[in-house]
Image 1 (cartoon, rainbow over the protein chains, first blue to last red):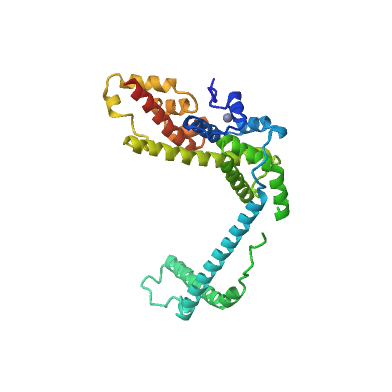
Image 2 (tube, each protein chain N blue to C red):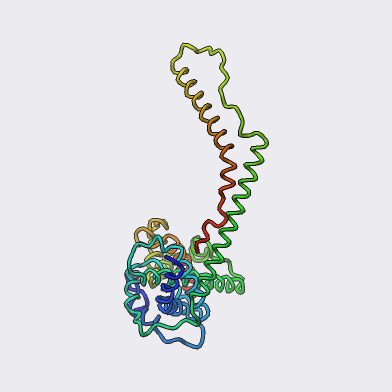
Amino acid sequence: MGYFNQDGHLTDQAFEMLAQPPAKELPGPQQELELLEVSEHLAYCDSCVERYTSFLEPQDLMEPLEAVSPAVLQELRRKNVRVLFRQIGSMAVAACLALTFWFAGAFSVDFTVVERPDPMQGNRLVQILQQGSQEFAGAANRFASQFSSGLQSFVGSIDLFEGVSF
Amino acid sequence: MTEHEFEQFMKQYEKLVFTVCYQLVRDYHEAQNLTQETFLSAYQHLDGYKGDNYKPWLIRIASNKAKDYLKSAYVRRVQYTLEEENAPEPVSLAPLPAALTEAKEGEQLAREAIEQLGEPYHQVCTLYFLGERSVEEIAKELDRPKKTVQTQLYRGKILLQQRLREEL
Ligand SMILES: [Zn+2]
């Protein structure tokens, strides 16, 4: 029997192969393919991962070449700084665009529907629809004025150190 | 988890993760890199992990990292071999070579080759080439990720082609 049984799960032989003592030479193409097949299976099969876990006895575990945590923590800090700069960058772009639109008067557009004589005045449905569109226009205007007045406080409230907890 | 807690977490499990990475790639330096990548990935997904046993969870992440590394090494080597041999690249899951499919006994040979395939290729290739099932259906039936089924079909097809060429 090989490293997989008929159901496609790993055999004891596969776990024994994994537990082989370190060799001086790197794996050849055939062994590399076998390791790929086994890794691929462990990447999705819970029951084989459970069995593999039970095969890994604490006394057999290997010491890493060097402590892992300093490099990982350094990389995490670097990542956080990158995320922070991206956030600042996108907030600056958003603020510039908003200011450009503000000065161009884009937020003071009047959405109010101009009253026109309606040829279908007698139709109730049309009245309901017109009432709805006027309400929308009112809400849109309220939003535009709130947004432009709130813009300064938004720009002012950007916390440069937000998200740098780590 | 605070920075200090995560540091303790790494110290507690670094031997386990390093051993898994080493056992799967058989290369110390690559195992060290993959161990770091495993912890970086674990940190990103720690909040979403609801279980209480970190060992199998970390082993699974490490296996995924090893798989990605071995897969790219495999693809590089296969492409290099194909370029060297000047053979067409079998990237698509197209039918078997024309010379075989046109031959009268080609279909029978292909069928026999599939039956002789070992796992993890036998079931996927039987369902795909003989059962005419879709990748989605196979993934569902065998409880494997769709991507895994695709790569197993890809490699299964290369194995089948190699065996059929030997038969010719
Ligand atoms: Zn399994």
